[in-house]
Image 1: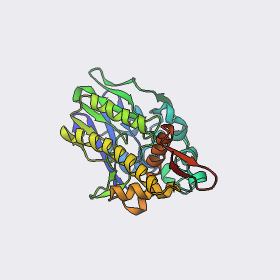
Image 2: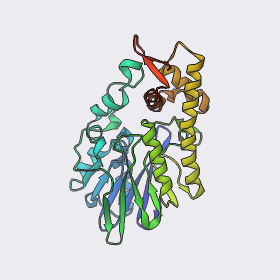
Image 3: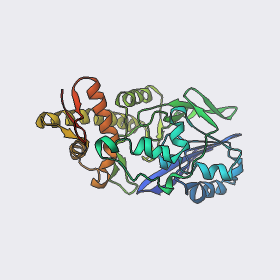
Amino acid sequence: MELYKSAYQIQSLYGGRNLFQYLFVGDNIALADTGIAETPEKTIFPYMDRLKIRPEQLTLAVTTHADLDHQGGNDAIKRFAPRAWLACGEADRALVEDPRALYDRRYNFLKEEHDVGFDPEPSPDAGKPRKMDVCFTGGERIRLRDDWELEVLHVPGHSQGHLAFYDRQHRAAFVGDAIHGRGCPKAAGGMAIPVTYYRVDIYLSTLRYFESLAIDVLYSGHWPVMRGEQVRDFLAESRQTVELFDRVILAGLEKNPAGLTMKELIDAVATAVGDWPPESWTLAMFSVKGHMDRLEARDKVRSVRGSRPVKWVRA
């Protein structure tokens, strides 16, 4: 749908969730995210065709962050639009370029010590390896027309190189998965998956940064469009979720002096939140591990590494 003049949201479904890409049409044509491997051919290019835009007219396709449902279509974009530049955040480059690295270093980084993770073989949805043409670190500007540009924001927490875009002229932010609330919803209603931020203090700084911007409307990778007070409520809910995790984790360790494993901590926070589908709980490993790293750095917990899986106890 057209969000405002020359800015469009492209929608499909993946795992029951909305999957959004954003198209900006000016003298240059830019795309934010490419979806899974089949998204360009099944969804993006047909949408562009309705706007009478050919794939080869695409100038730039930016992956907001390293996740298969945001980068999987990069190979197809480059095959059909060979002159378009592919881009991502510099710190995410290795994971965006290679699905094997994405799985080994992001999705399964806790397998050995904590016995949580995913199938070791990349899903076909993650697409084929594809090199980036340019990488951003934040502070760049994407010129769409002489009177219209997108500011590139570096907003880590969910991933190290996560990018967002700010359209100052329209007071609109395109944030990918940089903000999580208390989880990601299903398109049909209800909760789909847990929060998946990782670096907690950096995530909190990202929330503060968005609070400092003049945002009238917020567009994301999966969440409904938010306006005005909804934006501020979403940011507040995100911070409250971080605080809840800390309380639940520390209370759980107080009750279990012998320690708790990653799986046990995931169960504790999932139960406290209350409406994440049980089959999705494993995804909370990112945020729980981030909290444990932060609490350990603050000498509030310590890890016990004499056996597998690793446990944590109160310090």
